[in-house]
Image (cartoon, rainbow, N blue to C red; front, top):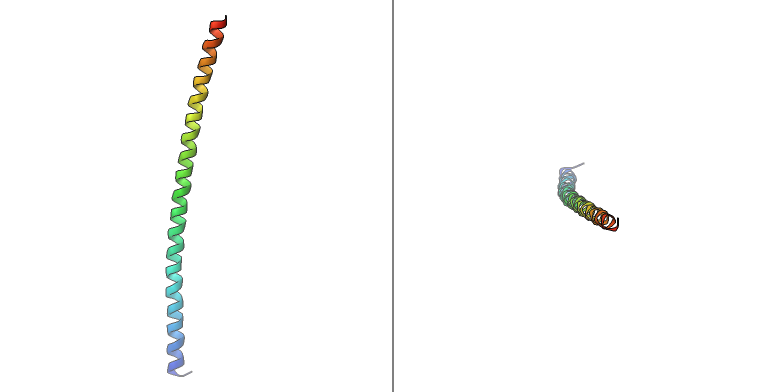
Length: 71
């Protein structure tokens, strides 16, 4: 193998590694963004569950008052 072939091989490998590194950074960024979206979704579900529980408690109190007034 002469020096020209070695240089071409070396530059090809360096280019491949550099491109892979950039793609890996982009993938990590996408994973972080997706993880943030999942956390936000989980928080929204917890908030919804809390609101649902509050509505259920109000309904129970309303029904208790209704049945007390019927006695």
